[in-house]
Image (cartoon, rainbow, N blue to C red):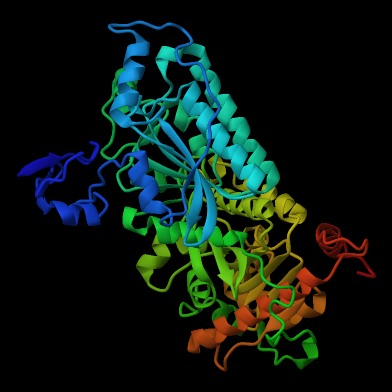
Length: 563
């Protein structure tokens, strides 16, 4: 027996010997298709899962408990179209075995507790009515009471018309429930599945700290047909798909179904808190006396800082973070590849790392805009740092940029304002912040990630108000005087340490960090561990753990005669 299984259709109740993917028409053995979680092995199309199947896939076996959801009005408007709503409701309950479109549960994923609200498209197209809204809100309230992360699995055509304005009010009700979790510092995650539209997309689905989507899942406020009818234009291929949303900075990532459990488990490590003695066994490599440094000519440092073989931010992250989950997008329509960031564990301590990303080859450099961020990059960085503050995660920034992108689009979308917002935000973060200049520290584009409790610099890195070439062109009227300008700018590590702009210098392998990238990255890791160990242990002058006053005093002192 062969049955066609559409990627956008619910899995069959029977188990045929063979199933046919209607996306690519490939035949797949039924038992294999089940093992693959209803993902076509040929084209990767993800068929819809009902809520019970989704819960079984994600949660540890035997850990799931269904939450009691308060009773709601069944038919508040006595709505009748071609058939009475009450009759349709009864039929949907009989067909699915569920009271409504959302199941609220709690359980564990790889041993870590989690509360979830899982939507089921089989029930009235997953539409948001009073019962569905109550289930989502109940799940959020249980997460708040139990202090667990909340997972929202969305699948919906929008608000439920048969319940009128009461359905519309569920958007505000659920959004307020998410706000309470924000105030309590609890992680929220949305898994977007196909489709997620209307009132669900415009409320709780997009309010989570982390929003990920299955491949091909569609999400939007209005559906493509409505948009095309309104604007009378044909929409681009892939419009509103997960891949389109990620490219435009609207979701953090696209995760394959088979990877969901493991990736969610990695994300849930943000709840881990190591012992007070964390990092005590690590030796600090940082040099804090400028007289102990071998000072190269400033222009030589400029060349070494720009050396294409130096490790990038992602290479540092890969070397010393476990379980890194990269997060993308400014959530306002753009993704800037020149800034990377996400959550991972540094020797068991969950941290948020944000950095400039360059590359080694010409193609990589072009793809990352040579490490020059757009306003979207700084807004992404700000979003991640605000998330770190909410979750009480230390922030580590890795600085390596010629400067912020000076192009037309950057000016049109507010480059100056984006940088200024980050300067203000970093000065106010209530968590420890460590910044490391690993290569070029170019102007305000570097400082936008540099307002930290501890600012460290690699021995051959630079940090300057302007590039030597730019300074020479303006003041000497000749860019060829860049080497002279470099000396005058005092942009090398030793000079910066004497000025107090940096707090310490991380030694590099002989010949520069590009000669032994693993050694340099390990030195950076040890320096960051030592700095965070100190910051986590030391209260401020008022005897509290708030790092903000000392951070502000640090930057307040620059330029004073006795500073």
